[in-house]
Image: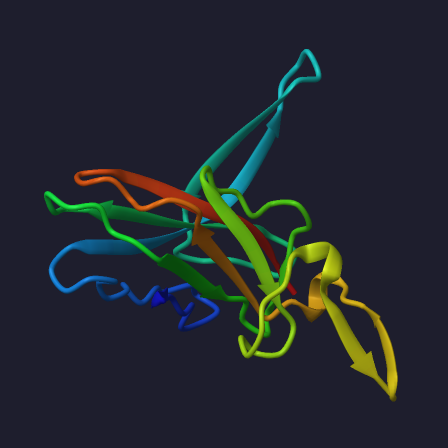
Length: 160
């Protein structure tokens, strides 16, 4: 399988732009934004996103990978993988992607499982993995990515 990996480089949330899954064909780019919520006078909440140029502990971030198959051929076996850095905690239920299976790792990306099957061993005892045990999130596309197709996958994480 071809893999695209992205790394959040610093707490200031600079991003490494990934390489292509197929030479000169599928490209991907990561964007990191701070999630802002504003409660209106009527009690409704408006959510907006701002570039993550500066973040503080407790803030929630949205990581988005935009991808594009710039060729005239379908691209197969596309897998996008994003590490969850030590200073972040994955926000449960936030990994989103149409037409992709979302898998999780709690062992630094060595193995991936559906969220409900993810476990860790602590002091010799196996238990269900908690959100702060998650080290990577991976999106595996069920179908080939059509020629010229583009889209995005995303997740939320909270800065410790």
